[in-house]
Image 1 (cartoon, rainbow, N blue to C red):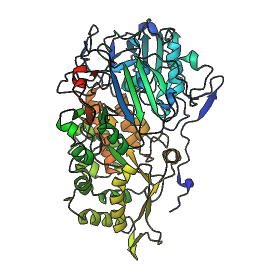
Image 2: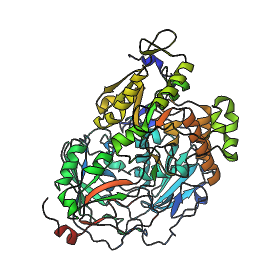
Image 3: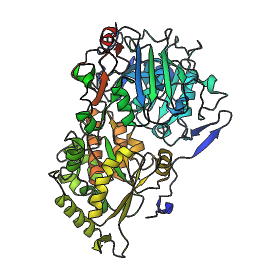
Image 4: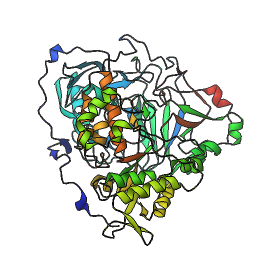
Amino acid sequence: MQKSRSDHKGRPYGAVRRLAGLGLLCMQHATPAIVDYEALEFHHGISQVPNYELKYPHDFAHFDYINPDAPKGGVLTLSYTYSMVSATPTSKPPGFLQSYDRLVVRAGDELAGFYGSLAEGVALSADRRTIAFRLRPQARWHDGTPITATDVKFSLDTFRGDYMASGWAGVLEWITGVEAPDPLTVVVHGDSDVAKQVYILGFIPIVPAQYWADRDVTKPTREPPLQSGPYRLTEFSRGGHFVYSREPDYWGRDLPVNRGRFNFETIRYERHLDAIVAREALRAGLIDLWHENDSRHWLSSYDVPARERGWLRKGTLASGSVRGPRFRLALNTRRQPFDDPLVREALAHAFDFEWQNRALHGGERRRAHSYFANSMFASSGVPDSAERALLEPFRARLPEAVFNQAFSFLGSDGIGFDRHGLSRARQLLAEAGYHVQDNVMVDASGEPLAIEFLCASQANLRIMLPYVHALNALGIQANIDMIDTVGRTNRRREGDFDALLLRGFIEVPPSWQLRPYFHSASDTYWNTSGIDHPAVDALVETALDATDLRVFVSALRALDRVLLWNYYQLPLDALDDTRIVYWDKFGRPEQPDKMYIAPFPDGWWFDEAKASRISAP
């Protein structure tokens, strides 16, 4: 069914302007607060979580989960399956973060500890609206020139530009200003607790201002740009491979956060057309490791002679820092009839997760009944007193079930046709004013209920096709529009769709994603469902402003309830640790039982003894 773009809400989503002389876009922001820089107290690390005691002291030698004596050398070959024709950092080529320094590094074995990398010190203002970084004076670009606060300011201002729908602008809108008061100090002002945004600040690569002054960082290039990290991009072919070589004179090689890391002499990324080809490349020994997200292949595709000999192994990488659902099915509430909560709930009941799990995933998946599934921030049971206090001001705008029922998606026996779920869906549609006429679900005026799923991935068809069949059984005119990735991105940015499947992960602890994903002020690309609810806005702000861990947790659990009971999106299977299949020719450091981020590839190393026993597949 043709949809009119006039269905979209008309509010602006962030004006942009061109910066003269740089060819960059920069968001307009309020004047930053005045801060007494002399009064700031710098520390070796910082946490996103209020009142959190860092694990590592200021004089720590290395991370406990890293082998500081790991040997250097060898080649690691990995795969990527998307098109990439540029070496610019804004294009995010595979492996690019290994060639740029970042301000802080997250520890893999604690909930929310970040430690200085490019920055030797981090300070927060008393109101927590300003964060300052003191840079290490020895920091250098690969050409030997110093890395300065000007470079950091340039990088943040550049990536705040809204020239790419899937770029960093949407997750940096909280920044109200960036200053460089001296060559080694950079100050970032925000509109809420900036400590909670330290993850995204630590993720942004720092790029050289002088190098990009007469170049356009937004345009594709085949020339490897100036870098500073432990690896240097030394070779790449258009749509083919990217090769990173270890920088022997890397300025930060002996920092505590780096000791024992970045051990491979070369890391090579080979492009394959899709996962099917990549798996064949792995079995043929052309790549060394593959992240296996498809349960069918995890269960049955690696029973090969190399695995029987112990050469090819299956394992996991700890990924506790990323939780929530693997996918969320987003409904566009800017359009009718998806602005009706009854219709959205009906669509939720028609999705038979248990059948898909049995038939398509070998029973390996678990349903995510929370946006923050498998984390301490997931709601459960009925709200406690702290959550109720946060929810009570919005009682009139919330379903009563938010206050007195535990949320859970309906389950089925997974054997066949889910009559119970479809029956409940039909009842809800009747309450919303729909009835079946000549086997078609129509409203009171005879207009059919139709939904089109926008899809750019053949793999996602496995999820969508059974759901479409179930909706068709209800009389709903459901179909799938296969489109290329660029077209999907553009239509998502413009809000020109009914529904689409999103990657559903949430960083733990939840922080930088909260506003872009859920706040009404966020743009159409990030707030895909067009969520516009005063309780959601208020709970996002409460979480971001919380200076007490209990308030932070309560606000997120309350937010979870509001999102779930309004059925804006349907969380599907819950994320767990990452499954990998790899050739057993590497050393891996011993890991504690509780790990949030596995040190791969930076903590692994090439083991010549293991590699020598493997013959050609």
